[in-house]
Image (cartoon, rainbow, N blue to C red; front, side, top):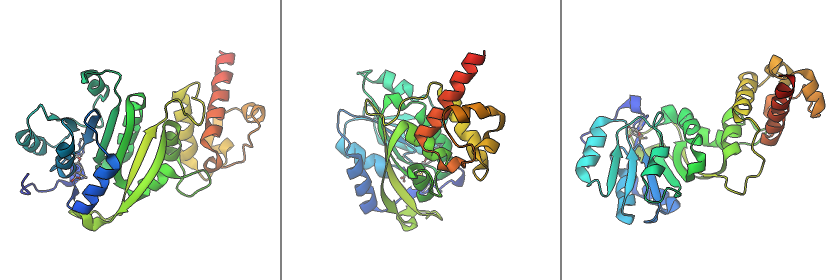
Length: 272
Ligand code: SAM
């Protein structure tokens, strides 16, 4: 594809131009013909072209009409299905349904637009039972937050919610010079693997409540749990599960947030 496209800032367009980095990403992805592969934000096709050299068919989701038109003109639909949509709103379950084998899980990858990466990750997590794995280029700082453990500076809502659903494997860093235009930040590649049978912790009884408690706790990460969570968690729940209400939100592990949310859910159900 030609380089006449002027990068659009509003779509977070920083295109990969470094063949060495592109090869490293594709090696990490290791695409196979039988995979149900989905690329988010193919752009000018830096990753798309190399993947299509190795496999028969690929789905891509691209918001920019000019870029999706270029991609459609470059490959027949039998090889490349271009979905011209906002990935933040797209129902990824439709792709599983389109597959010849509806049990097949998706493998999603992409050099993501950094301006929407957190909401996009949350959106994708809602499809995690349908996803085999994900490989993403993200801002390095976001990858550090995703992988952080309790008591680390980067630990927060993103770490807990991602680790509740997936294994997080940061792979390697990529400098700004590998893109045009170069972003102002360092980037990293991360692999995410939704848990199957091997979940390291149990599912929360009420995932909406779990997610809500985590979000509220980290609105005030410097407060004590008791002050940060206020009326959401009555004092007797802290006592029942032996959790010190003077601890700070950033000191609780994922398991402890699940235990807290389960206790609140049981308490609410009993008092109804
Ligand atoms: N994959 C290409 C590469 O590595 O050179 C482009 C990566 S660029 C960082 C991000 C791509 O995501 C752009 O093509 C942009 O148009 C697309 N994009 C931005 N927001 C999007 C959205 N909400 N849904 C789908 N694609 C989006």
